[in-house]
Image: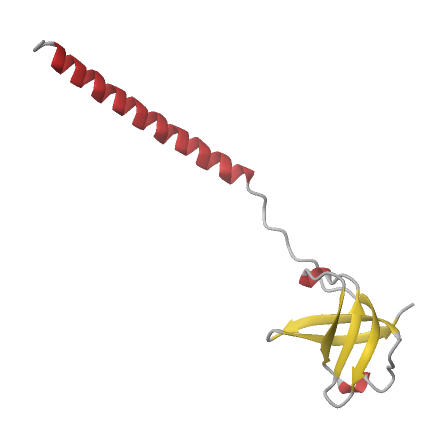
Length: 120
């Protein structure tokens, strides 16, 4: 019995050491695999003209309500929303119902139209 106890203790320690090493080895491979499997960051699409239709014009506050298509560079689905207009000089020629193409950017949390042209 006295001989059996040290043998059992040795076997237990060897088992624990082998398990710890296997887990460490497994962790290393999982880490390497996860790095290899990660997709590279994709660049945001460049700003492009967006198709839209003017629904309402607020000339006093330089705002347009536009029903628009997808705005890819801002990851925004089609919807109707209000935009600020960068240059009031764009407003006099516009009227509700006009089909347009426009550029928009986000500034200080607001959506701002920077260019408008008639749809082709």
